[in-house]
Image (cartoon, rainbow, N blue to C red; front, side, top):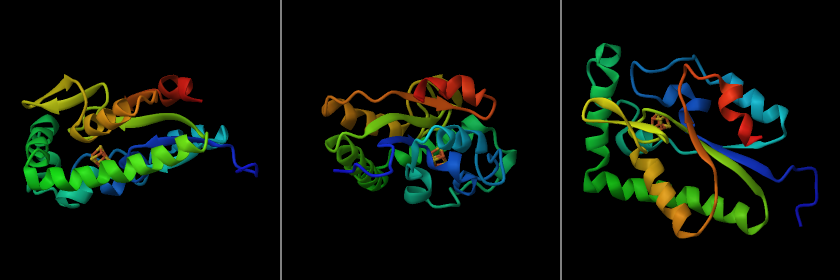
Length: 178
Ligand code: SF4
């Protein structure tokens, strides 16, 4: 089965790295996407799965920050984290985690290689090595990635994860995922 032209290799990538239009007001780095990331995985025949944007899906495109780019990022990120922790938002978040796990389970079941999950460091949702809380960038995972990681761990899966930021050298950071 699946012995056709496909590589059977996929990588899961934070939504906004492929679509900057989803990101919170004042924080987009590029007009459309991190092209280096797309090119890196395309050049190596690794299919890209775009993760859902938890903030867009749970809070809306307008996250409710009237100050936009004038806000201190970590302060706004902390406010967003508090919004994500509300019980009504948690239900929506769970649906996104389930939607993602369904895809991970399917690729795993059929022997595809999941090269990794690429998050967005400092994000209150998609941070992997760092996230935001208490108005600062701190070590730890964002709310969405933490919930996803819990499900991955429960299943005993081993999927490498890392987060990137606009200032990172993409090839150096993601070379190990090829
Ligand atoms: S880091 Fe995650 S929650 Fe934030 S904009 Fe990107 S995809 Fe959405």
